[in-house]
Structures are given as C-alpha cells and as structure tokens.
Amino acid sequence: MNAKASPPIPPAEWIVAGIGLVVFASVLGLMVWDAVAGDQSPPRITVQVDSIAPSGDGFLLKFLARNDGGETAAEVVVDGESPTPGGQTETASATLDFLPAHSERRGGFFFKTKPDQNTVRLRASSFREP
Amino acid sequence: MSRRASPSRKPAPRGTSRHFLRGLARAFAGAIVFGLPLLMTMEMWWLGFHADRGRLALLFILSFPLLVGLSHYSGFEPTFGWVDDVVDTFVACAVGFVSSGVILLLFGLIEPGMAASEVLGKIGLQTLPASIGALLAAGQFASREEREADQKRFRKYQGELFLMMVGAIFLALSMAPTDEMMLIAYMMTPAHVLGLIVLSLGVMHAFVHAVESSGKAYVPAGTPFWSVFLRITIPGYVIALLISAIILWAFERTDSSGPATLMGTVIVLGFPAAVGAGAARLII
Image 1 (cartoon, each protein chain N blue to C red):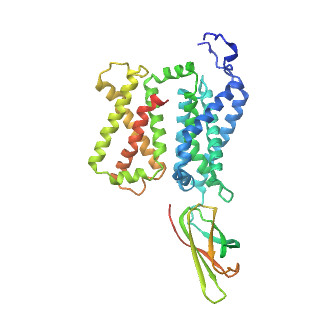
Image 2: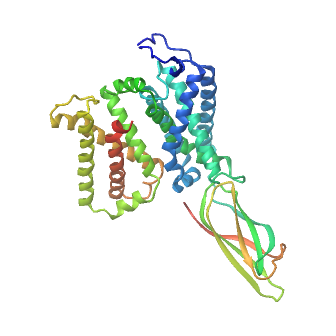
C-alpha cells in the first residue's frame, strides 16, 4: 500500500459531484414539498378541441385533456358529442390510461360529419384512482 | 505496488482528472446495465407520478446512507475517507440521473405538457437503481488490484451483511413494481408460503456455502453447518424480508391488503430478495 495520504479529488470530480448534489437535493426537495404543501385536491379535468382535420372518409378531432387537480386520474373516459346538420348527434369516446396531476394528454375522435369547434361538446365522464 | 514493464499501458495515476473520467465512463456503463430492466418497466413510469411523495422522499433519504456505504465497500474509485465516499455518492447520483433521464427522453416518456413533479418523479425513481448500478458495476469493471482490496473489506461480518442487503435490494427492486407480486401472493395457500420460505432459506444457504468454499467469505471453509446457518443465512433472510417489506410499502403495494395477504406478498418478494442476497458475493 503506497497510498498513505489520500490523493486529492480532481476538479472534474468536484464538478460532477456538485451536479449530483443539485440533482439529489432538487428531487428530494420537490418530493418533500409535494408531500407537505402539495395539492391534494381530486382530479379536475377539462377537455379542449386541439384541431379538426379531414381524415379518411370522415373527420378527426384531436383533443387535449388537462388535469388541474392534485391527484392522478387513471382510465379517464373522454366523451365527445357533435351535433350534425340533420339535427342528430354523433358520439365518440376515448380512454386515457393516466392523466397525472397538472399534466396534459392528447387523444382523438373520428366523426363522419365535420364537427363544429363551437358546438362540439367534450367532457371527461369517469376515472379510476390509480 | 510493483511497476509494470510497459509504461504506456499504465493507467492514469489516482487523483487525476483522467483517472476520474475513466471511472465515470465505467459508472455510466454500470448505471445503464443495472438500470435498464427498470427503465423498461411501465409500472416504474407510473409510480413516478402517482406514488405517494412522502414515501418516495423517505426512500430517497434511506438510499443515501446505502449509497455511501456501497461507495465505501465498492465504488468506481478506491476511496480513502468519508469525504471521498460522499463525493463519489453524489457523482453516482449525477450519473444515475443523467443516464435515466436521457433514456426516458429517448423512449418518449418525457414530453412537454408534463408537470415538473411528474418528470422529476419519473427520473428520480429510476435514479436509485441506476446509482446503485453506477457504484456496483464500476466495481465489476475495476482492475484486479482494486477488486482484491474490495474483497478484503467484505470479509468483515458487517461487510458481509451489508453486501447481502445490497443484493436483496437490487433484485427486489426489479420485481417489486410489477403486479405479479400481488397476483402470486393471492394464489398461494399457507402451505405454498411455508414451502417458499424453506426454498428461500435453502437457496440462500447454498449460495452462502458456495461463497464459503471459494474462500472469499467471512466464515472460513469448514465451519459447521448450524453455525453458518445461524450467523449468515438466517440474518440474511431477515434482511431480505425487511427490504422486501420496505420496498412494497414505499411502492404502495401493501395498502389495501389484509395481514395474511400482506405477509404472503412480503414472502413472495422475499424470495428474489433472498436469492439476490445470497448471490450478491458472486455477482458483486
């Protein structure tokens, strides 16, 4: 054993260790903050029209679902109702596996007639606690 | 240490940045090798956003002394004191975080529109196994001299038990997030559970015996069966069950189950934990 005194820690190691410290502290800090002061409210889901475009022999309506609540929702069912010029209503539904707190997920509906951005009704009808 | 004949093949001396960068490359390799099974487990992604934050924080806090201990016993650089150990631990955290983050990003699991809590939760959870990998596998790729120095430290009793704990955590962590742990526990009768306990102890003792006869173990070869069984195998199994219970609790796998199912699940996960504990010496 010729290493009696410990060799100095090279500058590169200090830098990487510094990054590690920041990473560790920020992940731990965020988790503690979330646990203590974080939002614990039930899921609050809003669904918006993202885009409407022709697709195949019909139309594709892409939607954006957003959860503003503090808890994650699983198996979120999103329903869409589009009134047709003939006075009837076309319906479609989609299931999102997970919609975490304060996050967004996207999906789409296929309609036979062109949906109108102003009259189409989108909403989340159910979810499950993960 | 004796000087080699070919000076051009000599590794960079300790304490230089070049020597450190070689260690860093090893650490990245280790983090990916050990982290990949969990990076490709979808339950881990989900736990990243819906797991209880308080429990994850506690898991993080508990893992810190574990990583420091691992850095002391193994690690990608031979360490000389607690400052070195702590610095190495933070290096391993950085390596674990960066490698997990890059891989999750490439898998399309981190996207705009996700909350900071979701992104950091996903990466942070994967950082734990990846950092263990960074410290462990770097030891795997270490030179012969360095490995021999490590082996010596493990020959103490607390070193032996610590190594068993690391092995148990390692294997249990890879299995705990999956639904199969609960499913298996539901299907087992008390007779099955008892059988699994016996098998766990048997497999563990076989590993302990194999290590013992290789001359690397804390107990010298020729120690009577009951002595090794009581001093190594039984404490090792208790450690495996404890680790299994802590991990299941942290991942919220135990919340809605009754005491019998709970015990069954702990013993089911205790099986891979026991195998990991027993095999630790052969793997690490």
